[in-house]
Amino acid sequence: MTEFSQTVEVEVGTSSGISPDATVIWMHGLGADGHDFEPIVSALDLPPRLAVRFVFPHAPVRPVTINNGMSMRAWYDIFSLGGGREDEAGLRATQQHIDSLIVRERARGIAADRIVLAGFSQGGAVALMTALRFPERLAGVMALSTYLPLAEKLAAERQLMNADLPVFMAHGREDEVISIDRATSSRDALMALGYPVEWVSYAMGHAVCPQEVADIGAWLGRVLS
Image (cartoon, rainbow, N blue to C red; front, side, top):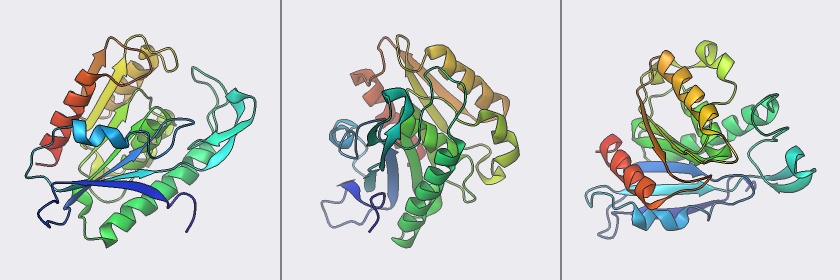
């Protein structure tokens, strides 16, 4: 088993012996691990009729340039804050890994259109990158406190099967790591390509707040209903 394939899993709506019929694959932020968003599941207040498996993968450990080369869990390298040159090789390698997690869920009996990709910060960037390029129709993509990576290549690489994929973007207006301007530029780029983006901003920094958790739960309830 590779490091990437080791995941934390939480199931809801399955207490009566019902098998999950939907999956949310949720990627953590830089330096965290798959346990980071595990506690949020119980707070989402999903409709009891939904049987959902939440899969939280661990990013591999790698050196990160902006942290003086210190090794930590990261989906890809970051050369500088605020934009600039991107780690395209790292992004594409991680895209392939997340593709493999989708394929694994398909093998476990979950239809592609019952799979949501989600992520926070770095994790949200790779969720967007992967979902919009995946060749089978997915249920949606959730991008929290993040941005659109390799944005200039999306128009040529996106899959028409997911050309109108529901997108939920949420961001803190006081985000000190990924500015709200960078996030809104990403939102506008997606909308210019025709994606139905649901956008919400909050009075917070690079974090998650209780209202956001409620909004996430409501959005998941809609796309998985």
